[in-house]
Structure formats: C-alpha cells, structure tokens
Amino acid sequence: MNLNRRNFLNAAATAAVALPFIKIGQTSAYAKEFHGFPFQFTPFTRELPIPQPLGGTPLSPAPGTPAASVGSEAVFHGIAPEFSPSHPTHRPDWDVHTLKTHTLEMRKAVHEYVPGVYTECFTYNGLVPGPLIRARFGQPMVVRTTNNLDVETSVHLHGGHGPAHSDGHPVFYVMPGMTRDYYYPHIVPRVSPGGAFDFSESPSTMWYHDHGNDVTGHNVAHGLAGMCKFTDPLEENLMSTNVLPDADGPYDVPLVLQDQALNADGSIFYDPLDHDGRLGNLFIANGIVQPKFTVERRKYRFRLLDGATARFMTLRLSNGQPFLQLGNDSWLLPNAVWRPEITLSMAKRADVIIDFTNAPDELYLENIMQQTSGRGPDGIDRTKPIRLVKFVVTGTRPTNDVTVTGGTPLRPNIPIRDSEITARRSFRFERSNGAWVINGDFYSPFRADAVPQLNQAEEWTLENKSGGWMHPIHMHLEAHQIVQYTGKFRADVWLNRKSDTAILEDNGKVRLRMKFRTFSGPFSFHCHNNEHEDMRMMKNFDPRPAGQPSVLNGRFWNVPQEISGIPLSVVRRNPELFH
Image (cartoon, rainbow, N blue to C red; front, side, top):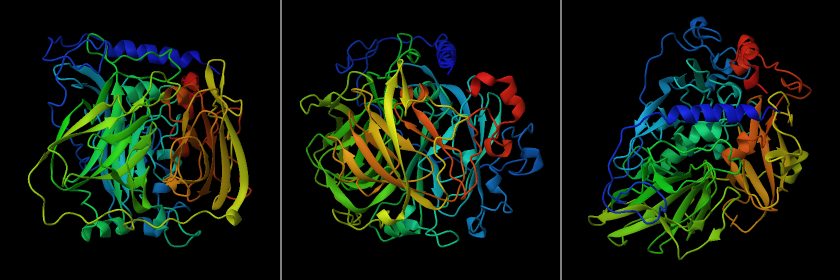
C-alpha cells in the first residue's frame, strides 16, 4: 500500500488553499471558548443560514445519450447503466414521475466562517454547506457534477439506495476538469424480488459529501458536504395531516454541525500527517460559527447532522427540555421518542422536534461531550457546555401547530428475522503501523471483501480491537438493523431500528443485519472518522446474483467502465489513484 500518496496530495492541496487571503482586522469581544484562536468575534450575532434547494437545470447533451457517455467530452465519466430503461435492473415503475435534472460544480470560493475572516474553501456551487438536494420517492434525478478543483473527488449520497456508478465509491472519481452524471432513481428496496416497494425503507434525512480515495478528510474539512431531504407518500401524509411540519416550509430546518480550524491568515488548517482524526476549535452550524436562529413559539423540526471529520457530540438544550426524536440516521423511527440528550458520532443524524411554545426568550443548543483527540470522546461534562446555536424565541403560540408528540406513530419497522439470515461474517477493526485495518488488511479497491447474494440477508459482527479508539462504521447502499450493541452510549433508538452508521466504541461490539437488494456493486463500508477511512479502514462488498462472481478480482483493476465511469486509459495514466 502506497501511504505516501495521501500525504503528497493533501500537502499539495493544503498549500494551494493557503494562498494569500484578504487581510482582516480584529473585531469586537473575544470568544473565550476558543483558546488560541487568532481572531476576535462576538458569537451569536449572525442569523443561521438555511440551505436552499438545488435548482433545476436542463441538461445538454441529454443524460444517457452517446454524447454524454463514458469518455465523452461533455460527460467524461458517463452515467450509471441502470439509467437505461433496457437495463435488466431498471423497472417501469422507476419512471412514473418526470426526471429532474440539476448541475453541481465543485469549485473554490471564499466563505466567511467567522465574521470578517475570508477563507477559501472547496464548495458545491460556491456554497458551504452545499445546496439542499430535495428528493421525492419515485422522481428520478440526474445531477450533472463537474469537478473544477485540483484534486480528484467522488460524491457520496449518504443513506441513499442507488447504483454503484453514482454511489460515490472511493475510486469512482470525478477527475479534475471532468464531469459525471450522478443518477438517483429515488426508489426503495422491494418487499420481494419483483414485488411491491417496501416503504418501511424510505429515507427522510440524507446528506452528501466527498468520498475520494485517500483525500476524503481533506476535502470534507475544506467544505464538501451538503444535506438532502427525501419524502414519500407516507411522510407526505404526516405533513398534510399536520402531524409533521411541511418539508418545504420554514419549520423544517437542516442543521449541519461541524468543527473547524483556521490558520492565522484565515486559511483552513489541515495536517495531512495527522492520522488520528482532525479536531477544530471553532464550532460551526450551517457554515458559520455560533449563529443565532430567531424562531416562533411553536414546534420546529431540525435534521441534525454531525458533519465533523472526527468529533463526537452529545447535544442538549440549555433549559433542560427534551428533544422529541423522530428519526435516526436516514429513517424515521416507528414512534416519536422523548430524549433528554442525543449523542452523535461523525455522519450520524438525529431528526428531532424542538418545541419552543413555552421556552424562555433565549436558549441554546449545546454540546456537552468533551474531546481532545481523534481517539474519540473523553466523556460528558455537563458543567462545561459548548454553545452551538442560540435560539431567540419570539411571538405568541399559533393555533395550527403540528400535533406530533411522544409515541406518535411515524414509520413501520420490519425486523430482519433469524430465519432470514443466510450468512454470517465478522470484521475486526484494528490499528496497524500507525494506520487502520479491518481483519488485518488495508483497503484495496481491487478486492471484494464480501460478496453477498442479492435478495438475501446477512448478519455481520463488527468488533473494535484497536486499543482505545472509537470508530463509527458506515455501510453504503442499505440500512442495517442493530441486534446487539456493546458500549456505554444509549442504543435504545438504534436496536432493531434502521441505521446507516453504527458507533463502534472502545472494545465494543456491534451485531447487525442487512438485506442486499436491487443493485450489484462494488460498494464500500468504512470508519467515518475520515482520517481513519483515508488511512485505509475500509472494505468493499459486491452484492451479486447467486453464482455470479464479483467484478473485483483482487489483483488489478478490471471494473467495467460503464459501472465505474473510469476509462482504462485513466487508470493507466494515473496508477497511483487506483491502489
């Protein structure tokens, strides 16, 4: 394994981002939470930005045409073969609604994390976080994505169920100066092959972020992340009957929580030789440091995301009132649950209601989890809260507030039964030579580490043997159901429920179940401490029909270009990107 490539690329990209910046003066009062931070600012003075939906754009040449196929000038990386109605996986009920088309550009842009401090970032369409992707069940989407950065990228729709070509596999790149058509059919798995859609699998809160091999941590820390809201008929009925706020209205708010670290000139600090996990001393919500949010005296839905690369968070409200949790990761829970505090690892989401009806005029969203290294959190200290967002509550109680409360039914959950399990696998997450391995192996894009049979269920046991480190493990393609959890974090809302990221605590163990449906791979699973992922704590799995071998042979690159979007000529010219 060539560990030097990551160091080289990250050092080069970091140097590029450290170009001269607009010089700024010192401002107002010092924020005492940020010891050593070189700038002064007054927290909670800027209003929380709300990510706006990605606008529709006609695409020319049309997706799937010869002029937009792999190797073409317009769309060099092509589109998923499953886009074609003649593909054996594609079904007529994928195309009931009109195709939506969008464009997304990855480019550098100046952003103000801190008031008056101008920082060059990596962005989607010039925004940090990126624009909101608004998706609906049964409405297919193509996002024509162009990489105008100087490093390879790969866009992963986290929590999505889609083709391998558009999943954001780490080496299914968008090369600098090139374009890929990401095809999202926006379907869910079926109850049985050829049967009805299983709406218990419909997601609600997804997000998207970079997934380029060896450079995920660097690219995400520099800004490449955004949110995605998904609705289906069941959830839209909850909205139309006033149980939940309208997903497109002002009371349904995506909230991306991150930490950030800046150099003295305002540029982003990133140490490519830190393989433990990057921590920042600035606490960011929707792209700005410690904002305020002016709210009415009513219920709001917040889709909370821990979008950091290595920081865990335990969230609470400063006045002691509980959250009403609606969902875990991508999926609604069977019933709404009251939670006094919520712990999130990197990549985990919590879909919650905060009721401001009887709240004080001011209160805060706080993080009470202490953390000093990428190993993982040091523990909760309720006497040292870090204030993330200030809520300013105004107005009087409305007459038409939503009705959701503790115990309200949301989305049915169908447990995977013992009798459905056709295979069991075990994976040990360990440390080796200063990097990260699974079952003793560093990641290889050539190797299929599991080849599950399509339309079958398996049980996987994940065990942390890395000696004092924590690893949130993310599974691509499918939801998993946790049937056993060893650790101190509360797992009641996870057990037998749907998740896409499982927290693997120090010396912890997670036993989970997954069904593999619709799409063959390859796909990946990995630690979502991005620095651990980049340092090779990742594996491939490749669901296949019975008796069909993986497209990965374990020796050299042999993935068909219509699946990967990577012409063989690119592999030959850039062998260091495919190792």
